[in-house]
Image (cartoon, rainbow, N blue to C red):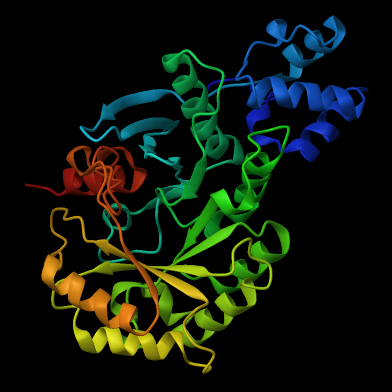
Length: 375
């Protein structure tokens, strides 16, 4: 994002932050609210076009601030209507966002990091390696661009994105300091006005940050579970070695006290012969009912594995997925099998890395090492 270092990209400020920014310029709170609406509700990036702002304020803003989206490197559209954007975040890094239209909603899947440090076996982003956290401006810029670009294309001022899921590249809770102001902008009535029920943060289970999220911005929560027992989850989700299942389940219970919904969503990637057998389903029931309070506090989202090169994993058969689901359904668990969207453009769950792979600094470093090996 090319701009003078002394200038601030206002996309990264939540309403409170923008109020403080304007106060430093000698402006009152209502001016910050006007500016916030111009940016997020109207999608205007040119201060001179903000007609109800005083000329003096516009001049001040031009000197110390700017509004800039991320450069779009590529856009790919799926036959099912899904759109995937690849955004340039500088220094050889890129991130992806995916727009998923459905009959009753339109969801944007947003990235929080360039790459990911968690290293889940079934996720291509994890195999890519970690480069850096995104700034709040870079997180919000994905929504800002998608919302207002879709309005422009459809020639409407009506809202185009009804739901946001932090399920793109990266572990959101490892970037907590930048995530929180971005979430507040999504929720603010002067920003995008999304309800807490319509904004979901997905985490692999960073327990202390789950507690902080509950206290500060308790949006809907999805937990990447993928295994019902510690030894198996240790191998699939390495973070489990630090925050094992007993700690994770306790954190989920605590989160329910603040959550906008009366349930937590657990995501479970179906891997043939690894975690998809009836005994795994029974162990999962035992895990969810550890405290004897039943299974009504959660929902299970079964996710077909989306293959990528060198993963060494295979998607469960439809028969095994249905058999697994039946064990859970018969016990009273609410279960959905995620419909794969955008798989023809590598935009499905776990696939967000294909176009990005060669842009990460981690890959660049490895390439340099290979190039340095003498023949």
